[in-house]
Amino acid sequence: MSSAVEWINIGSIDEIPLRGARRLCVTLNGRPLAIFRTGDDRLFALVDVCPHKKGPLSEGIISGTTVTCPLHNWNIRLDDGKAVGPDEGDTMSLPVKIAGGDVLVGLPVETGASV
Ligand code: FES
Image (cartoon, rainbow, N blue to C red; front, side):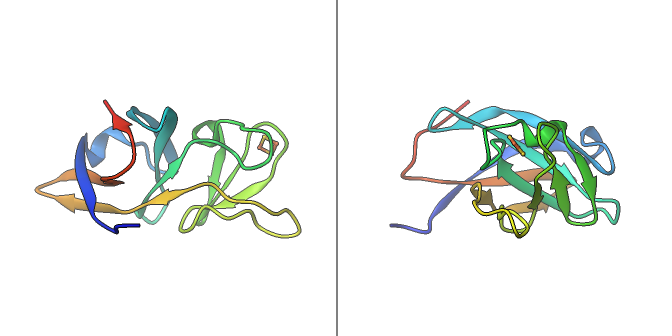
């Protein structure tokens, strides 16, 4: 599998609430994506699907670098998408960078990203 990514500009960091999230209009193989902003201003991108029963993580509560799923309260780490134990499972995490004040999310080029 190639590690090449296509960087997608998703707009200004100001459009992402502090300690909040925003679902993107970009999908990855039909799966929704979301960007998360922590209280200390770090950004993370995940496939917006809880590994438990597919809850929308972007509607959860962010605490530190985890998000609590709104459906059954699993905690998911924002940095790697893994469930915090004792729960098990993960959702895909994607690279994020800032360029010129805009937020870019890296999508794997060989997968079916669509806008
Ligand atoms: S769907 Fe997320 S905790 Fe159940």
